[in-house]
Length: 141
Image 1 (cartoon, one colour):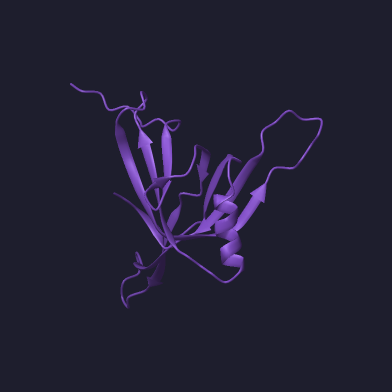
Image 2 (cartoon, one colour; image 1 turned 45 degrees about the vertical axis):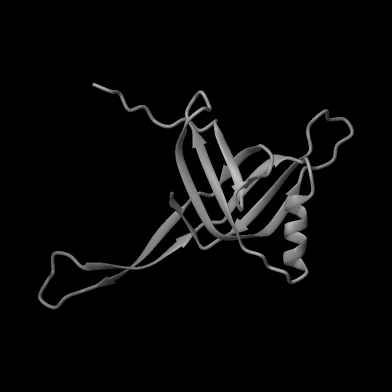
């Protein structure tokens, strides 16, 4: 019998409008929650009906070593009033990195926050940028 192991989290790619924009170290915020409304029915005292109302999605946070100004420029355009929504694709590969195992499409994303690493002359670290994206939701592709 074939064994189904959990997917590993260390082999992934991030594409923005179908173009891989450098290697990302971390993707956070893959959350969604469906709100509900409770309704009581007359004469039914042992439970209440729970009706789904709306699903909300958390902001997506992408982190990577600073290599170019693509993400910063995208956010600057938003600040300047030019909001261009893009499709972000998160691709998870198998342990060898040779076969795709999962793909999520994040629809209508644009940056709402950009953060850079603190500059420290005593540190030998790498400059890291983090961008927070709001979006219309994600789904498996």
